[in-house]
Image 1: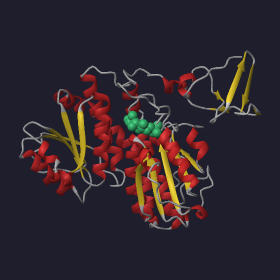
Image 2 (image 1 turned 90 degrees about the vertical axis):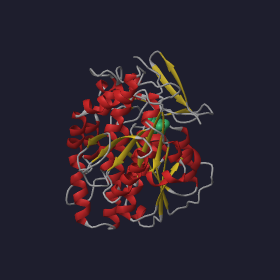
Image 3 (image 1 turned 30 degrees about the horizontal axis):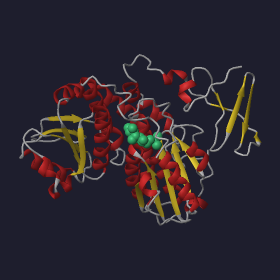
Image 4 (image 1 turned 45 degrees about the horizontal axis):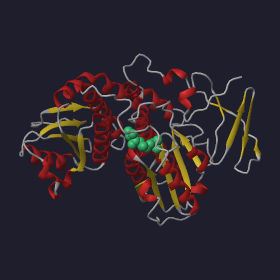
Amino acid sequence: MEYFIASDIPAVLEYTKNFYFLDDNEFSVIEKDNINFFDKELNTIYKKYKTINLNCSNSTKNGYEDFMLKEIFEQPKAIANTINKRIVLNTKCNFSDSNLSKYDLINVEEIYIVACGTAMHAGLVGKNIIEKLCKIPTYVEIASEFRYHDPIINKNTLCIFISQSGETADTIAALKLAKGKGCKTIAITNVIGSSITREAHFSFYTHAGPEIAVASTKAYTCQIALLCLLAIYIAEVLESTSFDILENLKSELLSLPEKIELVLQNKEEIKKIAKQVYLEKDIFFLGRGIDYAISLEGSLKLKEISYIHSEAYAAGELKHGPIALIENGTYVVGILTDNELISKTISNLQEVISRGAKIFVITNQELFNNTFDLVFNIPKTNSLLSPILSIVPLQIFAYYIAKEKELDVDKPRNLAKSVTVE
Ligand code: M6R
């Protein structure tokens, strides 16, 4: 008999698939052929191990140079694994793994999505989808802010907590706070049995497989896909959006893996762009609406692994200050997928071009007579889902810039994969 002690499942997946999970204030005594568990008063606790059916090859690089690149390329499969079992055409999405019912949803007056970092950025995309489909006001908050400002929430508030690891200290504290105030709580996580799932009333898993690189990629796109399915399910239960719109969205979701493959096939195009810009000191990301949410994530990805200073702005905010930073040669990435806002963003990009900025645009539209330096095209999809496609070139962009700078993309300086302290 052998026992291993680890803070994360993938660390020992090579040796075992059977895991005991320790909760707060619990202890374990391991002997050669025996293991016992105790609470803080040293009373014996009976625990049964859980079998985690994850493939150990998910925790190796599998021929890729880095985990981050492997995880970017795993996105088509990760999304398919996350959505396929839940999507049922012509009838309600399958959320039967929890008891989330009409009874839990009918009195919901507002929704809070609470998370940190990239998971919070997924929440921003989720807010847009939930409001459009469920017609319920939805707010996104950073967990470390939410937990300390005494949020006005109650039994009619549904709180959704997103965390890849399920172990982020601020997100767990925010969840405990919301429960204490009587809210219904949902956890969205990638790690089976993680702390967040043991706290929330309802838990739903992304099936992205272990994410090892510190920079989150596949977990993010899977979180958005799952939020979209949850929004569709709530809309089906509450009958807040027409059957045809919801069915169309499900079909679009099912076609995403194929469309992501198309983006991945053009990685060399992005690599060339990365070679041209890796020595930049500052890179700005601009977008409006959902493209602003993607700008925030693209900017975070770039700064955390390439150490290039980067900021994202809602393009309409430029005139209110940030345009002062634009000078000859400043590098700006523009995201143009939101049909209704594209002409507005283009005119903001013209304003920075006239001040000497160099522009790289990511778009799903045909741009006629444009004056942009570089344009990268992505496939069209339902506008609610375009973030799942537009983020992929930005992940690759950050990756190749960091590689050009010969940095350790998987373990960027000063960062940890799971932030288990405040
Ligand atoms: O495990 P979590 O999703 O709760 O982690 C939240 C953030 O720490 C995480 O997304 C972080 O921002 C990533 N390094 C971003 O790539």
